[in-house]
Length: 112
Image 1 (cartoon, rainbow, N blue to C red):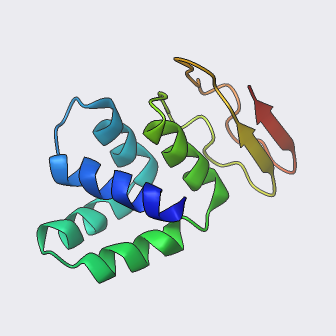
Image 2 (tube, one colour; image 1 turned 90 degrees about the vertical axis):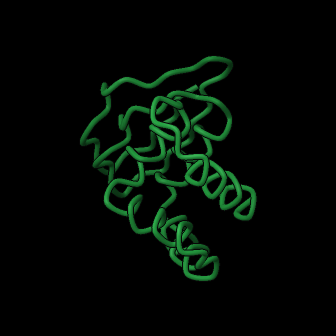
């Protein structure tokens, strides 16, 4: 699964189309890391790109948001600032998330 996410992120960043939901979503969820990953792709530094991304994907919340983007879901940062939590996100077909659960701590969250 990690390699699928790496391939998705790589192809989405390489495509680089503003207004594309996946591209814009990745830019949002990756935050400041987006530019660094983008520069690795532009400079054909595949090993650096994959190494940095593997470290980032250890964050389960970030991984869940990227997986949602890969599956065509709209992710808007609603899982930001959740700590010490177990998050299970299954939005179903055409699902979206709002900012309704920002700053939730020490909780198990399931979004179906």
